[in-house]
Image (cartoon, rainbow, N blue to C red; front, side):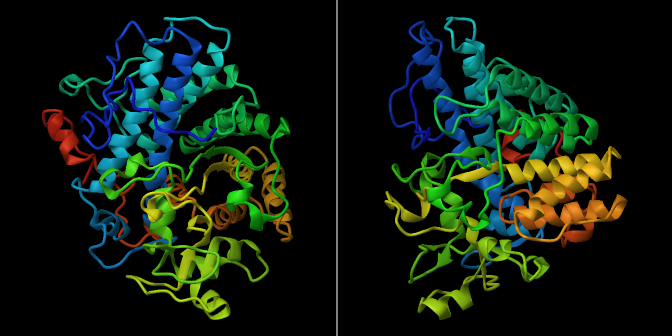
Length: 484
């Protein structure tokens, strides 16, 4: 199911702000109208609109890499998208356009799911448990992104945030938000199947994997191991035998994809409304600056891998050439040309840079059809390995899961135990998932960020600041995150 924009019936609140005129470009119906939610088709249409905000999570993925030690901001200059540059240097403040976008877009996703849940009892139909299961998975997904980035956030369940609510709504402690995320995912697990009516929808496996990750973030290792074991033992997913094919556009939604954000090149967008694009905006941002040659398309040269992460790969590891494009070597071998941008390292995030062959609808750099592999089966295996090791549940099982990931690559088995095994698992996660937006949060949740990220201040940078204008809109009542 390729998700397409649906503008009707939604005020599409971004946080507590009304959205821009560019975003709502057709007249909307009254969201309380008695003419809606009268059929399964109405619920399905609203659900597609709830999926829609997943496409805006491209910024989450970029920042999850750039904030870590995997990549540098890049771009054209030190002032090119200043908010991204500041996050790279760990000097970001509550006035940051990218963090504001992330807050608003993820809360827009929350609001769309809550709109469905607000009217969940209006009309019955046989397939409603699946529809509500997908809805609650999406609400959990959006809230998990918000908690990861901001910590305590306003929580509302089964009712929309409406303008004016900000004067009465407080930030909810993240422990309570996690409790709601867990409830939503457990409901989704109970009401979804491993197969779906359309490609791209959430499944029982998607909910199990996300719940395992949510448990891992809270160091609930036993719970994480249990739910991830259930997923693994279901045998509904398998590692793709040829790692080099995973991220190509003709191998989307493969056997390793537990949950994948769907993108297409059918509807373009401009910089005035990045969230309007059907394409993966990050791919254009990651692309090779002023490129002319085979295979790839040009882009803006952001999110460039560091020499450190390149050197971390063993010579025999086939993931290196899949994850990292050595542009100097590639250009020399293929008679290609390119420009050198800011912080040029000579490397690009090959998993998510523009390939030739798409429609280039609208602004070509904003409409790339590359799906984002949000949760891969390799990630599930490595999370399960971490749960077993960190929870002292059995290093033998931890090694089994870890070595399944390495066996696919033809790499030798890991034989370590205890803290050494933990280090091996963390290194494997970094190598396996480089470029996919997870590393910053892995460093934070395992307490390694201050020793790995230049400029990281313990007690501050574990979360990002609440956007200043959101605090002001709430009547200046919310406390800012510490030390911002």
